[in-house]
Image: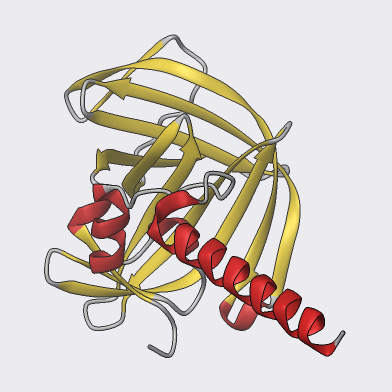
Length: 198
């Protein structure tokens, strides 16, 4: 009787080893294949991922290191995007970095302008360039400060204009006045991202 039990155990061990060996050699058809890394993943591993930016992170652009002072999160009926306030602490220069990840990632860089213009017309002229209105609407917003501290929240209005590669945008928060910015779409790979504390 003991010999039969020993033979059964040996057969089970041999069968189990053969099964493991066949799976290691590619015989496991039930296991899904790992997704291949895309060139975009490799670029993000090298430069950082702009989709994960937040207050306190550092963004390097054209040789200047900007610190993210504040992040605005926007939501328009489920469609969301972010806007990061970049500050160069040396030259005290401020810029805005827009990140939209809807049908593909779009990254844009903006600077505020003080021109006495407001949205409304189908086309606007600014600094010798004629811009055409692309879209306008309302969204909810909330701000995030360094350390994840929540800030203001509420409703805002926006209007976006373009002239080829050039962009003109307007934002109004609550009952405040319109703020205008000019900008351009950029490749995410011209930026180097350094998370806070890295």
